[in-house]
Image (cartoon, rainbow, N blue to C red; front, side, top):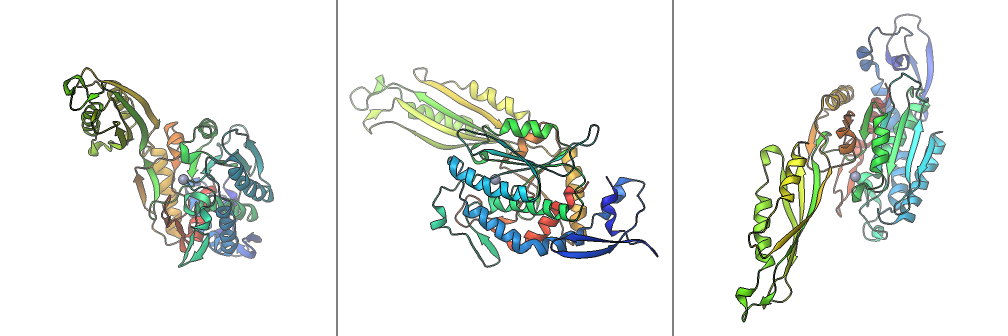
Length: 424
Ligand SMILES: [Zn+2]
């Protein structure tokens, strides 16, 4: 609905005045009741400056919220801890009158689905799906060595950037829209608990909700300052090789070295890398053998594969399946596959990005787009053909690293931008 976007149309003469609350301060604005003929025009009318002012007023509360989430440590493999973090969020959702549904999990934290704004009516556009995760890669107790603190213009702490700040920004953006009566479509916030381990239980939930949505905004960190419009798909393989053990001195010819075979396999699979296609194959871990004087009977390797094009998935899967030993006395067992399809830069995603860029420009911010080799849950939604824009969370550095931190100067503008993107 367009009429709520009209706040900032400066009218001539005797247009009515309306009081609106954005943030904690009452803003008095003039506005026109005229309805624009085409909705493309309405984009210019998203009150981005007021959004930014509102976000700035919310900043202290937002900072407190991020800190409370970071202090609720929530590693993927610790259900109780993740659920405790989820409870902090559920309380905030309740305060915003969101409709919450918990998807109970046994092995992982419960997945949180929260709906805001008017329920979708038949025939209207699908909701916007805000996608995030509350699990982190950091074990409970990390705060002792990586305390949550604010210094040097940053907020530091485990999971701050990836992605508790993004979650708090989303809740703040929704709060701003609720308070300004600008929430005129349904928004679904889906926060899972298993993203950092590949989203095994949340993937079907994410896909089902994405299919009913008209767009997906992913709250992962920005790439530098950019939103992400493309991500590579990922695959993992494990290769196990069996050879024939023998005394390296006495029975050398009777042995068949699994490690030598492995060396050949490593060369073969690494050779499938095609940088121009955005296809990389990297053997990340390997091992084998028992004693120096024994011809090794066993060897193994674990392989990371990234693809930029969907079509490369089946191609690379066929290649792994067809691996044959050079030494026929050895055998090769291959397990694994592509687990996240690539998020390709689709037309729908570009439309979302262009809108974000236009809204950012009104704040004097140049918003670039970027492609990344890392995957997120946005890969799943994009592969279903749902326009997906990623990297809409915090700006910072050091995800999964000791120096994980967010840059405070970007907190308010990015939250305002997120709020702007949720209008319409
Ligand atoms: Zn993440």
